Length: 360
Length: 134
Image 1 (cartoon, chains in turn yellow, cyan):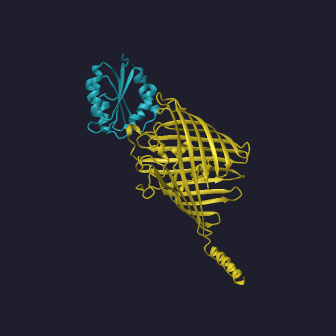
Image 2 (tube, chains in turn green, red):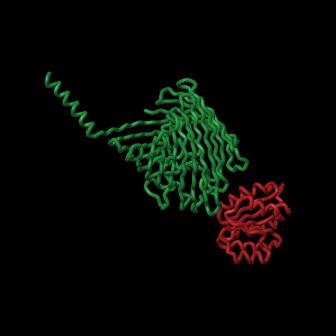
Image 3 (cartoon, rainbow over the protein chains, first blue to last red):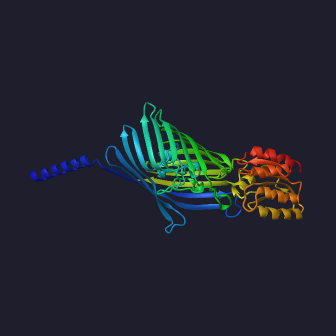
């Protein structure tokens, strides 16, 4: 009996001592979603209706704390990708090492989400945290989603909870392993959180592209409209982006506005001014029931040679039901259309979407 | 029944310039009665010009770049002026040979020169009087 107690005490003493010595801790989470999509394209006279189920992204999220100051965050996503042998592809969406060098000031290196606006900075790929089904339209066209490089970050400084980010990294045209463009991309971002649940931020991004036809791993341009005569502009291009966001997610009211002003410059067609704005409002009726509305528009100028001329306005009415914080279902109906008279890429459709999103 | 009575010809070896011109010209030209033609090759434009003349379609103006492969804008304008002396010719260029352009102007062959990159208002200011004269 004495020996048994002695061994139990020895075991706990050893275990506690080991934890102290290593202070090493990993958290692994998984996230995924499934969609149903229905679209009625009023511009098409034949086969105007699409109706299908979609297996969405599945995301392995790893957070490791090596010690009090150094941590690792990784996000690995598997998604459907047409044309691959298995029809699925894996990607490293984020892999970053963070060193907290002084109080709330940190140095980060690796692949990060570019700290532009609220959505790209705060949410990761797990749809369970999204207030609506889709990201703002500007994500597919204007926002440089990722950056691979170094970042200086400050969080929750002073009574207004001031935060800053300064990033230098491979630009829009880079891959995750190489960048033949000698000019790095620069991002500067600031935000304040003056009261609980409210965050106001602004950011600036600049990248000089030696060949504007190359859109690499850090671009959001996968959904860009077809290029002129099947050719992309291969000249050099200055890419400037200013963004501003206001986010409030309180107990009852949810509000998010993301504004993007993008200016591209080419020797061929000069300055092109592109704009996008996303507004979300939701109201929590009861604990689990949140109806919401979205107005999401974007205008790409006629003389833009990077994203190419396009304008669209998406209006949505939706409902989110939160079974728990780890699983929810969202349903949306919406109408998408051209809101400018000079549009050359017709959009006129009604959509219905349902999404199950989960995390564990 | 073909209602096309007029034509406009744009020649530039850069398709992005032609796309931009198409966006802009469609705002000031009645496409029901005017054929808008775009060429990346000056020789193709020249060949097409003969066809338009044969079909008795009135070409309102020709808009040309200067630096193009095979034949530059000045040479194209001189060749076209031999076929239709009263045709309005506008050059749109960012890197034109100033001597050749000056010679064109001295010979009265160039209606107007517009620098690239151009803005829509400037282009329309040049083109609207030509269009309205028809």
